Length: 104
Length: 316
Image 1 (cartoon, rainbow over the protein chains, first blue to last red):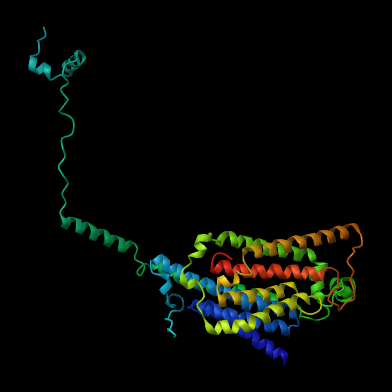
Image 2 (cartoon, rainbow over the protein chains, first blue to last red):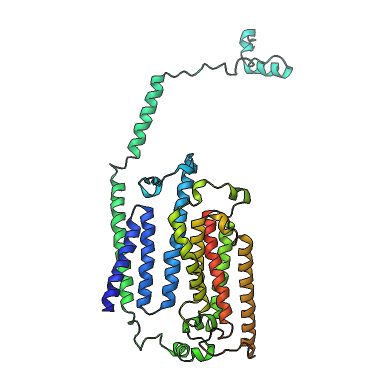
C-alpha cells in the first residue's frame, strides 16, 4: 500500500518539475516549486527520516519560496524605476499578467 | 656650328627653371599647382532617397531569414538534435540508476562495519538517543563545523552585495514596505509565539528526538520572517537589529570553534575529555552536544532572517 502512495507522489513530483519549466507566469512557477518541496517533505517521512522531513518543510516550503517572492516583487519595482514610472503606483501586471483587483 | 635657341623656347626648358630656382627667383609653380576652392557637393533629395532604398533592399536580401535555406535547415536540425541528445542522456542515466540495489536490502555495499558501529555503539559512545544527531555532531563533527562556517560566509557575502547605506535605508519606495494587512497581523499574533517556542523545543531536544540545530534554526528564522513581514521593519528593529545580529553570529561561531578546538586537541592526543556523558535520555547529557545545537540553531536563524531582510530592504 505504501508502495502505491510513494509511486503516486513521485509521479506528482515529476509533473511538478516539468510544469515549473514550462509555465510562462513566474508567480505560478514559484508556487509550484513550493508545492514540490512540500511533497518532498512527505516522501521523506515515508522513507523513515524525520530529521530531513522537518528541515525540508522549514527550508524548502518556508524560506526559499519566500525569498523568491521577495525577489519577484523587487524585479517589478526595479523595472518600473528603469522605465521612469512611479513605483508606488504599481499593480501586478508585470509579473502575473493580469491586474490586481482593488480591494477595500 | 650650333644655333642659339630663341629666348621663349629656352624659357620653357627645365634647365632654365633649374638655374632660375638656384638663383632664387620666383618659382613658377606657386599659385598654379595648389587646389582651387572646391564647389559644394549638392545631392538632390531624390538621389539620397534612391540610395537609401537600394541600401535597404540589399540589406533585406542578405539578411532574409525566411527564404534562406541554410538557416532554416540549421534551425530544424538544431531542434531535432537537441531532443535526441536529451533523450539519449536521460535513457543512459535511468539505465544506470536501474542497476542500483534496492533501498534497504541487507546485502547493500553501504551496510558495512561503519554503519554497524554507528547504529550499535552510537548511544553508548556519544550519549545521544537520536543517532543522526550523534553522527553529525560527534562522529562527523568536523563537517558540521565547516557547514556552520559556510553559513557565516554566505551571510557575509550577501551583506557585501546587497547592503545599502543608512540614508537610503530610510527612504525606501513605499510599496516595498508591507501594507497594513489586518488578517496577516491577526494570524501572526497567534502563530509567531508558537513558532518560536516550537523552534526552541526542536533545537533543545536535538539529541533526543528528530530535529536538531539546523531544523530548529530554520523554524525560528521563519518565525522572524513572519513577524517582520506582518508588522514592518520598525517593530522588529526593537529587538533584532544589526547590533544584536552581529553579536549573536560572532559569539556563536567563536564558542563553537573553541569547543571543537578542545575536542580536536583531546582526540588527537588521547586525553580523556572532562565533559560527562550523563545518562542518555536527559536533557543535559551527551557532553557538549546540547550547547553545540544551541550555537548551530542561532547561527541558522540569524542567517535565514538576514537573507530575507537584505533581499527585501537592503539592511537589517
